[in-house]
Structures are given as structure tokens and as C-alpha cells.
Length: 90
Image 1: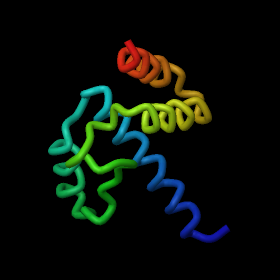
Image 2: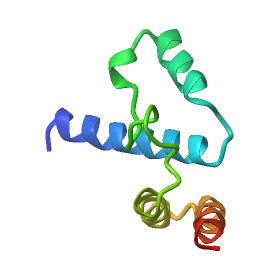
Image 3: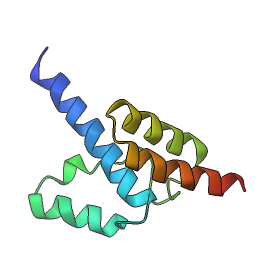
């Protein structure tokens, strides 16, 4: 497999981590933006949704995040995301 494949996987993982932090309100979009400005790599600003139009707290985004973190065996993150998802349906 080429380097491009691994870069895509890295970008996906970064997007999921950013989304988790944003959805759980551990960071703001400005925090994520500042991180990329500091690294000089703004082209890699990664989120699986548009933060100018939604907060990521939708069923489809939460299910995507839960699936991602289940596959990577990060169960504490999954538990947090499941709580958020349940709060949306109540």
C-alpha cells in the first residue's frame, strides 16, 4: 500500500478525533482551527461535518463516531457518545 493510503487513514482518524472532541464540547472549532494554524498545515483541518452549519450532534454523525471508536477499541469515548445520542432522543 502506498503512502497516500496511510495519509488517508491518518486524516480519517484525525477527523474522528476532532469530531469527538467537538461533539463532547472538550474543544471549540476555534481550538481546532488554532491547532492547524500553529502547525502550518491548515489544509488538514479535518471534521466529518461542516461546523458552520451543525454541531455534529446528529444521529448519523454520532453513529459514525461510535462505530469508529468501537473499531479502535476506545470504549470510554463510545460511552460518552452513546450518552449524547440517547439525550437527543429523549
